[in-house]
Every structure is written in structure tokens, then in C-alpha cells.
Amino acid sequence: MTEPHSDPAVLVEHLHQRYRTRVAVDDVSLRVDPGEILGVLGANGAGKTTTVELIAGLRRRRAHDRGTVRVFGLDPQRDRARLREILGVQLQTATLHGDLTVRELIDLYRTFYPNPRSREDLLGLVDLHDHQRVRFDRLSGGQQQRVSIALALTGRPRLVILDELTTGLDPRARRRMWDTIEQIRDEGCTVILVSHAMDEVERLCDRVILLDKGRVIASGAPTALVREAGVTDLEAAFVALTGRAIELEEESA
Ligand SMILES: Nc1ncnc2c1ncn2[C@@H]1O[C@H](COP(=O)(O)OP(=O)(O)OP(=O)(O)O)[C@@H](O)[C@H]1O
Image 1 (cartoon, protein in one colour):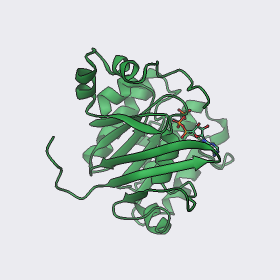
Image 2: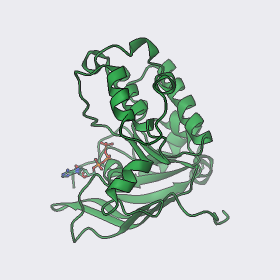
Image 3: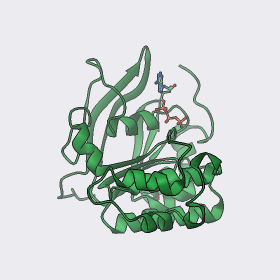
Image 4: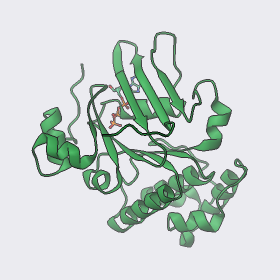
């Protein structure tokens, strides 16, 4: 592979994160180039959420947590305010004001950014025009998830981090979200996608990293990983590389 020439969107070097005695992230290094979609794969407990939350500046680092993270040159710990202007995050545990309607939530988020997407645009991206006057806490789980994706995209982020983009969405909504991700990538947005869904990763991701017990055990284009593992699809490559199916819980250390 030739060396990319542009400055990286995300550069992670020798990242470690420990919770008491448990090592969650163990010497992870990765690079995401502008406009790329990077997939982060791994079994439950592999360290995916910890890694992306460190990139997003959402986990506190202590002196013994080694390694560096840069997002468009910013340090997520030190440059929080500037990072917030260029980063959109949809996380597994989004906590939103449940008593606001979809429309009110979007309008609220639009006030946080200097050049937000229009409400109409956001409702269209996640196909929620018909539910804009419904309170968030009255929506189905899948609809709530689509709202959190819209909110992540409100500020026209340069980097968006999506944790379990389409888990729990019906097939039509999944395809719609895939189109949305391709659309924002075409607009120049860089995407990190944490996923267990191999069809989604194969369709969307330029490259993937495979985490196992906090370490990167493989990385590359989905087709290259499949070829290297000598199998026919990414799911089989995952099993060949980790020795287990992606749905299985990692045993506690
Ligand atoms: N706040 C925390 N305190 C203590 N341990 C934690 C904490 N967050 C994560 N861990 C542990 O760190 C390890 C990595 O967790 P993480 O949530 O990053 O994994 P994951 O790959 O995102 O898993 P999943 O697919 O289940 O979301 C796990 O062993 C988990 O139990």
C-alpha cells in the first residue's frame, strides 16, 4: 500500500487504557485519513468503545495511561472545545432529553454549532419527517437511534464516530443509514464505524481494524483481510483471525 500524503484525520499511537487491573486497550495504533471510513471490529469487550471514546475525548486519562491521540492535530483531552466543533458522536449510551420532541432536539443541537445543517436536511437524512413532533421518549428504539445519528451530524462534523450504527434497525432503515453515511463521506466527512455487522462493514468501510483483548490483531481493506485469511467473507475472516465468532462474549481475564 502506498503512503497517504495528506495529514491524518485521526492518529492514535501506542494507546493504553487500564481500568483497575483490567487492560481495556493495549498498545493500539491506528490512522484514519480524511474522507475514509474505518471500521472497528471485535467481540464484546475487545476494547472498541474504549478506543473510540478516547478518540472522542470522552474518557478521562490518567498519568499511567500511555499513548497519544490526535484528531485533525487536536489533543482530545486538552482541546475539548475545538474538538467539539469538528466532531460528531453517536454512542451506544446516548442520553438525551426525553421530554423534547424530535424537532425540538434538533433545533436545540443546531444552536450548538456555527453552521449547522438545516432541520429539513437532518430529518431527511434519518427519514424522520413523519415523527418530528413526537417526544423522544415515545419513539421506538430504532427511531431514537436515528435521532442520535441526526444529532451527531448536526454540526457538519469533519469526523463522525458511530458506535453500532444500525444495531436494532429494520432492514429498510439500515439501508437508509448506509446511504446517509455514504452521502456524508462524499461531502468529505471522515467516519469511524464500530460495528458487529459484517455486511455493513463490507459495504461501507475502506479499511477495518480488528481488535482482540485490547490489541489490534489485523487491519486492512475488508477484501484484503478476507484474501489473507484464505476465506470467502469477512465473518469467516474474523473467525479465522480470532478463533471465535463475533457474537461470543470474551471470557473474563
Ligand atoms: N468504565 C469502565 N470501568 C471498568 N471496566 C471497563 C469500563 N469500560 C469498559 N471496561 C472494560 O474494558 C474492556 C473493554 O470494554 P469496551 O466497552 O471498550 O469493549 P467493546 O469492544 O466496546 O465491547 P462491546 O462490543 O460489548 O461494546 C471490557 O473488559 C470492559 O469490561
